[in-house]
Amino acid sequence: MTRPEPLEKLRTGAGDAAFLVRQLAAAGVVGPMAPRTVARVLKGLRDFGPTPAAGYTMNAARRPGTTAIIDDFGSLTFGEVHERSNALAHELRAMGVREGDALAIMCRNHRGFVETIVAASKLGVHQLLLNTMFSGPQLRDVLARERPAVVVHDQEFAGLVADQAGRDGGPLPHVVWADPELGSPGPDAVLAEDLIARGDRRPVAPPEQMGRMVILTSGTTGTPKGAARQQPKGLAPAAQILSRMPLRSEERTMLAAPMFHSWGYLHFTMGFALGSTLVMRRRFTPEAVLDAIEEHRCQVLPVVPVMLQRILELPDEALAARDLSSLRIIALSGAALPGELAIRAMDRLGDVLYNLYGSTEVGWATIATPADLRAAPGTAGKAPRGTDVRIYDEHERELTGPGEVGRIFVGNDMRFDGYTGGGGKDVIDGLLSSGDVGHFDADGRLFVDGRDDDMIVSGGENVFPREVEDLIADLPEVREVTVFGVPDERWGQVLRAVVVLDDGAELPASRIKDHVRENLAGFKVPRDVEFLDELPRNATGKVLKRELRPA
Image (cartoon, one colour):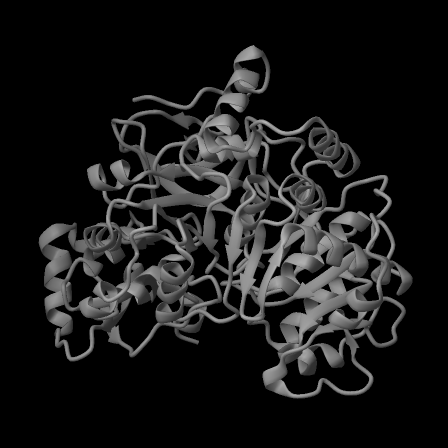
């Protein structure tokens, strides 16, 4: 079995520099520029480091008239985003936002998210990305813990934000991105567009320190934790992604995955690194995504698996009616990708699927290419250069044999710094726990068998629900399924399956149990099978199993 090279061998030496240059050149990131442009690009990088601030400053120098954003409100060039974010940064500073403060952002995918991130980055402000599906109590708990100086939000969230307390005990200052469809936000609202209109568009003095990015965990098991991560030290992380996913400079990305989540945010950062045009819609519908791909000739589509599933639920004629020939990459992450879904998607849309496995805490771990997914459906793929992935047993001994199941640990340059409320993840040999269990196959491809806290012990046998989920999902009548453990007096725990059938399909629970019994050990057969119209999910498509467990 082949394994990735250890990190310490990849972070030093001429080979590392050659790898970096080779990957960036192949993607078109580096290329000929006029001397004056080179000077301005290098100044942007020197002033701000490899941050969103530098990304849009450098692109404004190199390609000022190139379209940077296409959203529901129109389009903006890189030059316009640079100047508008300068104006917003100056006005935020005038409101009292200082380097080292936290700025909370509760926006859907549109220019407001991008310009707020870039403005905060120019100020050296920590960026707290809020889930747009937060309830009032969740939002209150997160804001009380993180204590931002101001929150910038879409108008639709004004009711949630209005009653939140600020750091001094008074009302939390907030800035609103207005929505014409919702009417006037009120005479006292501080509007982002008003700040930009009156703000100074000249360059912002660079901060002493780069701001951190705080992404909240998905929160499938309780109040989300804040995972803090420093900005990358250079362009090596981008090169590592490019070594397994062939993104190219100046292409168009239909950014459907929410940017407040680490997967959407990664493609935002890859977008400014590559000088890509980001096409965005505030709300996801399969039809709107496909229309945008066809209209704007998008080459890249980052989604979470449930979004891909909804696209594939469209009638064949709906897909055939749209010209999707420009699409080179469908990039998935954020939740488990069933092997059956991957094959079905490639059969209908072509071999353009790339599946990244990682987490908010570890960054990325592995990437499966279309060839990986064809050869081994369900695989999470292989680690890119610069990432070390290992499997350990309960005694912290490394497992190297094919099929040996243990906890997954990851090391790379994008691991988080710890939770903002304190604590972190388990560490072995300098590698961070992903929170999952899995195994390698004989060709070094990783398979994720489930969450390490999802594993149940039934009658003394270890059972990973993911294996059972994938098997049930293979039944043609099944649209989606989740499996988890429930208490049992005799066996300790047993499995329960919750199944959603395709419209009009019929499938008795006994057939599902027989299918599992015919293919897996008897202790893996669900004791209970429940049918629902849909599964509860969070904004990134992860199933909220806590809402399905018995009280």
